[in-house]
Length: 231
Image (cartoon, rainbow, N blue to C red; front, top):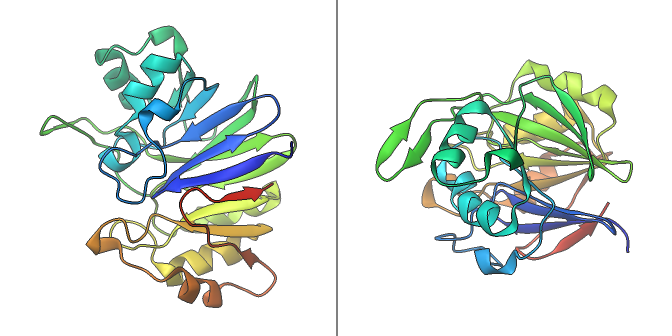
């Protein structure tokens, strides 16, 4: 099968190849647009977590514990996962600017301008560095921006020749549609898929309006939850 990217709702995505499967920022419980549940993850190779907010971390513990998948995250998220019973041997802490090869492919950690405090049981735990990821699977590069504002450092992603960029457009602590369109121009991927919008009232956005703002030589693909895009 061709390697596919599946939108799972909000900022959650799955990348599936012939040889591996990985999930990014699993948030299904309490997500009105989720197309799956924790129980759908029986086997998984890896999980990538961009930061510690509930709408990116909500189901990470349950999935990690039941699949024993590799988990890639920052140091504070790692501490939280360990405190919740996730096997420490499955966790890899990565820092901004670091690249590593895994069985499923290559991961490069890139900056995000956001916070990463972990919200659990009514408490907010210490911040770690929020991030985005450039994930290379079967020679295809996917950039998941995480939650980020627009920043000049995005220009540094352009030489990486990103195939698909996953960009938040909802505003409220992330880029809005105008800013995400500017980010697409700076990064210049083959395709952009908007994410992180309409899940909550304060991140309402129109993905079709966003598409009209993006430079003509970058394709915009608007996915509904559960839909797939071939890399």
